[in-house]
Image (cartoon, rainbow over all chains, first blue to last red; front, top):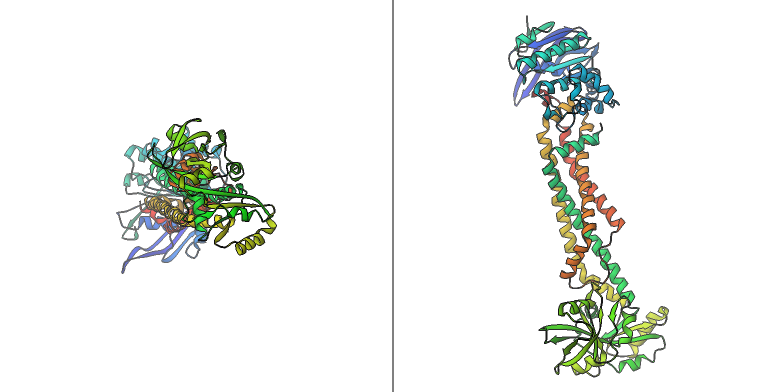
Length: 218
Length: 387
């Protein structure tokens, strides 16, 4: 479960202080499937970064399964990212030259986990790309690349899946397939948080959190 | 999948760019390896060649020892002559096993419109003075015969029995033997009887130098001191001094060539650093992604550092391979351009030098990788989320 209390985040842009999040409180139980929507610049990505332990709050608190992240060292945040969080990005960020299989295995190098082909194949089957295991990213469509990225996010068996605009570069058909995949993963107990601009896709999640001007819109 | 595979993949993603950087490193290492091998081979072969003569010292007219080195280097004509009667005086010293007078001159070859280097000596001493020579035919048996070097025979298409004319009276000399290729100065020499050259030069008593071999080396210093004291107007130069003189003369070329190698290495490694920095700049978001999915700063450092080490070490290995394969060709060209090179194969593969070159390429590779790798660790994982 994720508990966010009075979360605020400031940035300094030159001499200007930018207030990205202005007191957000949220409770996301284990196994939830939520979407975060809102216009550009409302703090969606900033919120995702803090939940994903990529950044720390300026004020307020964020706890993951009861562990507060605001006072954690960079090393501790890294361990949480390795063990508990899976990331999916808008631009997929697959490494060209590496096969689908090796791309999926990438996080295991950093987590110092010994995983092999046999550990990846069930995941690729889950995302519908079993026959593409030895293909290179440039041989895949956008939708397929994003599914590889999802498999990569799942390889270390995270508790939370965070996706930042995962369908931003996909057509409608592929976008719906990705959301179907999220729904399937969530049905297996994975807490899933998706940032999206698309209200239609957002409506497929269990809850929609709307942000406006750094706050949750009620 | 390991860090090394990731680094290799990153290098292979930009094949042409990586190849050019690798090529630059391999050329600079090939250059360094060649120069170091050459210097070592040069000194070793020179010492061997001088040692091969069996001579312990040389006697020349008073002057500087460089003149003796010059005699060995270019078979140059010494400005002053010794008198042949000196030989009789030297024979009184019981410790002198071999007393070999020699006269070196340059004579015009009117048939070929060329100046030939004539090395005149007691022909019976030649096998002792230059034991490495292999001869087709025979040594000259009288004053009318000559022994010619490989290049002269090859260039003039001379064979055994042919006649060559030298001297103001265009005296005939019959080729009795041809020296097989040595790669050294002997290839361009003409060997003849001492008396024959003295007659041509109209110096019946003149000699350029006397080579001395002792019965026992224990008396070397004492003998030199005694001869110097008792015979005025001469200078005695040991073969060690000759070696040092030649090495001193070659030293400036050595420093220049090493400077060129250092410049080449610096440029190639700056090229590698530039390549890696460019790659990091292009991969900012990818590195951010890796940080987001669990890569520590040290992990990123290792990936980038491995890339640099792979290129520089690979370049170093290829450079050594290039030199090893092309050593005969390189040596051939060096022999054309170098004023003097001792006989025998100079560019010989040396494990210590090869190890030193590989180690250098790794160390300098590590140095050129430090800054880009450190810079890569500064990339924030938030970069990836920004999109």
